[in-house]
Image (cartoon, rainbow, N blue to C red; front, side, top):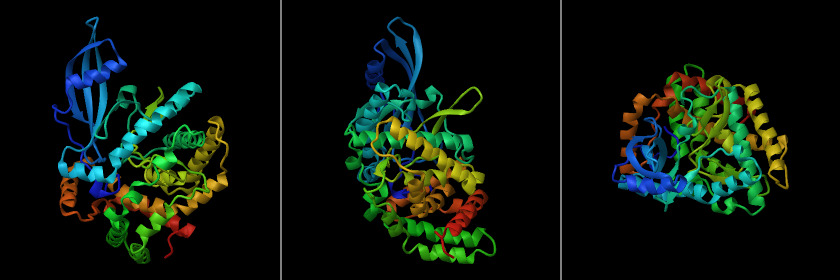
Length: 424
């Protein structure tokens, strides 16, 4: 399984044809930022993502050699994000609203956030890349974050404690900034991003999580060894109600603190910049396709159950430290950004407890894909294409028997048993 979670809405990364990304078109974009550019001497296109990393779009890096008006040359790269070129996948992505949400965030939210940070002298607090051009709802050009030394941590490694704290610190600022600007009428994210991907497409997706839990129960019997039959039975039984349970948990409560969520805040979407000692000093997050307005605990649950190193995911003490760091940053940032109301550690803890089941489901659904190696991508390509053709829910459960997945899920399930979320 891969992230985003809904197989029928996924698109495979592929190189865009050169006819789609032409020098004159790119020059018109580049000269808006750098008027001294005379021509693009050379243009090299390459797929941005590793095999097996799948988003609801095609992402292509355009590396250019630019000649300036004084005849000197410089190198420059940008990232072109576009709807899939395959007609079937383009239809699926368009109908799901994935790319439309991404464009909406880059067009109507992030520029206002950036303008606010610039005015208040907090420009270094941004966690997104800047959009250079928007072409309707079909193509988006953004700055190349790797050119600014922001890079991914390999997804199968997981994030260490410093990387986790840096991630949630920046996530807290993003949540606080969105809430503050919404309260001041600078953005209208509450209305524009009312529902998550799953909520918008519940009729098309069907009983996705039910199928995931069924496959997970099978993997417990196949790979966990003796003594786990009751746990397998629990997930078998839970598969009958889990999709509705999750939709119920994700129903927004406007009486509580809400913010604009990234919706896909995990190791595949967090790019780190390090100092000379290789310590993280900042992040960029690029994919906003599943942004929605809701409880920040949902972003936290997704991150905490998918992105830390295996030894951190199941450690209650370390998890508590990460959450505490998030809360402290959130409280301070709400005040810094001029939000009228604050939030307490108890309120965040209550929301995390309420959303635990979503976190468990995310772990089952995402980790089995994250821990698979890139050499399995060819199979994944065929698997997803077949799902698109047959319009059936298909679960790629091969990753559920991987030793690393089994190790981490045992810790997560044990934690859920202690909390009373899973009852065996």
